[in-house]
Amino acid sequence: MTTDIPTWRETITVRDYETDFNGRWKPSSFFRLMQLVAGNQSTSIGFNFYELMDRGMAWVLSRVRINIEEFPKIDERILYHTWLNGVQQKLFFIREFDITTIDGKRLARATTASILIDPHNR
Figure 1 (cartoon, rainbow, N blue to C red):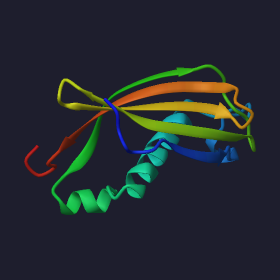
Figure 2 (figure 1 turned 30 degrees about the horizontal axis):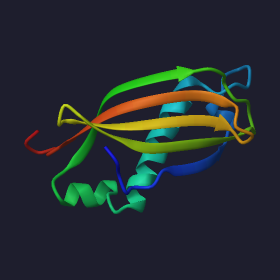
Figure 3 (figure 1 turned 135 degrees about the vertical axis):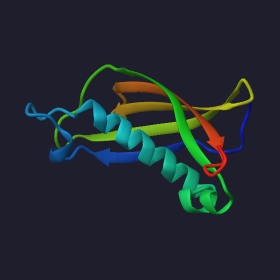
C-alpha cells in the first residue's frame, strides 16, 4: 500500500530522568517516545487526539514488536524516524519506527499495530 503521508523524523536528546543507574536509556523510554513521535506525526496531518475524540474515534495500540540493539546514554541525541506501512486484515494500521544515533547507527527498530475505535461504543 502506498501512502501520501510523509515519513516523520524527530531528534530527541536523552534526559537523565529517562535513564537507569548506569546512565543508559530505560526500555520504557523507547516506548514513551514512540507514542510521542507517532502522535506528533498524526497531529501534523490533522488527526490529533482531541480532534479524533471530537469525531468519536480513538487510536488503541494493539501490538508492538521492538528489537533494541543498543541503549543510548544521557545527553546523546537520537533520531526517531516513523512512517505508516499500510493496513493488515482490514483492521490493524501498521506503523514502523527506525531509531538511530544522529550519525546513523541503529539503536532499535519497531513495528506497531493500532486499531481505530469509537471509545464510547467500542
